[in-house]
Amino acid sequence: MVRFIVLALVLMNGLYFAWSQGFLLAYDFGPVPQAEPQRLRQQIKPEALHVLTAQELRQAEAASRVVAKPPECLQAGLLDATQSAAVRTVLEAALPVGSWLLDAVVEPARWIVYMGKYPNADALAKKRAELANLNLRFEPLINPTLEWGLSLGGFDTQAAANAALEALNRRGVRTARVVQERAELRGMLLRVPAADEALKAQLEELKPLLSGKAFAPCR
Image (cartoon, rainbow, N blue to C red; front, side, top):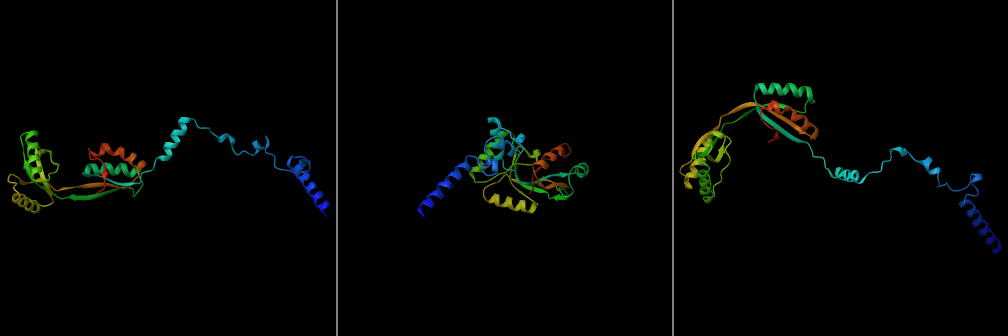
């Protein structure tokens, strides 16, 4: 019995050796050849293989780190009737329906608590320092005809501005007054609800029609 087992093991080892060395390939019995040209025949589209240079590798790594920005809502305006008609003509031909809107908008008049005008920038800076000592805030003027001056707050109604002025008088402000910084405005507001990078590039072509009214994030 032991002799039979030993003989069987010897035969099995010999058979495995012959199989592994390819001696039985003539009988279609043996391992899959790993040498050429068999490997060449197994390649799939070898012509598509491209070895990157060091510069191309750096560019590919940089591109993989770029995260696409999500679309954002942009608006421009207010546009008068002539500007609105020109913009509408361009957008209807260039962009899909629903990707942009032209809305009629009324912006209320703006009233401010105003100090000025001062004769020069030095006088303006001195008044700013005085207000800072009183812990009073001031904001930029949007009406250039009121320079050199200061706004201590903007309001949608004259009554609200008068109430703010009275409160400032109680804090020691004596030379301020209420003025209308801007009259009521009516026009069309151009809004692009979801502007991705490609759409933003197309919107650049509208700049000549907007008369300096640049796109900004929607309010």
